[in-house]
Image (tube, rainbow, N blue to C red; front, top):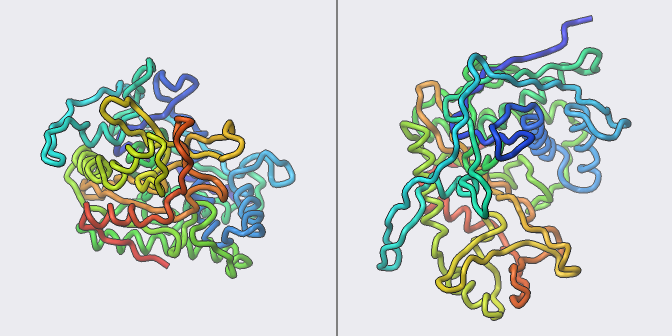
Length: 405
């Protein structure tokens, strides 16, 4: 019997790593379930690009996903074929309490207003509110080991292993782990090995255009691997927008936003860009004020960045928007994860690259609308598309779109 495939990678936190344990407000914990969940998400996105999102495709995706990372249904494989373990590399990193920086003074409509820093705008919920303590995190530079090992006796162990490594590549290049991972929290880099299963984990280019080409080759290689492993799914049926986050050129766009000298500079610059684009933005600023008084409006454009969307008006206190079903109202759901992933990668030359990934999936399930926390406000239609996010990328960055097939 041949040796079962395994890989141990040395990971480094590029940005604050908010990994909650048994006590989410206690010390962060390196736990395998955090990484398994993240890897499962990216594996599902890659499989969606092969099988599509109709009923038959979803069934095939669930089976293929269960083959790699297991399922609660024993008929679909039971335990995960890939064992994941993580531990500190040498010394246990010292957790840090998240603290707010000083507000900055900016000009808006001819007035001086107080705004959070870019960092705090991205990580605002980690600072503690409503009587909750601030979150603790492992700081940038913390290092640890992540092992992926195929269980003995697994059939097609090479295929299972390669798909797990491809999911890891996507996680490192486009995603993150832990809280605020879609807003640059928990970005990771691989120190060693630099390559596995033909995937290079380290970015080597020096400018945004070349980095975009480098990422594009990697994304194309990921898709080619899954197409080879699942040839029966090539004639896929894919909606636009898709029913869930899918890695496919028609429903997923990736951009290189820029290069910075430090992780802190990248976080601050991207956070400031997002803050300035969204804050007091019209027509939302005026339209939402009307909506709070019960006046019908068409939609709230900024909600496309994710829900809930908090906003504040002088004398009216903090309000919010939630998603939910019109009937019955008690079925309201208060969160829609952002379709936009923001992450920071580290090159072999010690530069820091901002990457944005937009999944053009259905914003709300069919029949659902936007709702306010107040009973008096009417329900609203969700945003029709993701043009506002694309406008954000175009206005705030000299971005290079990542080409892939």
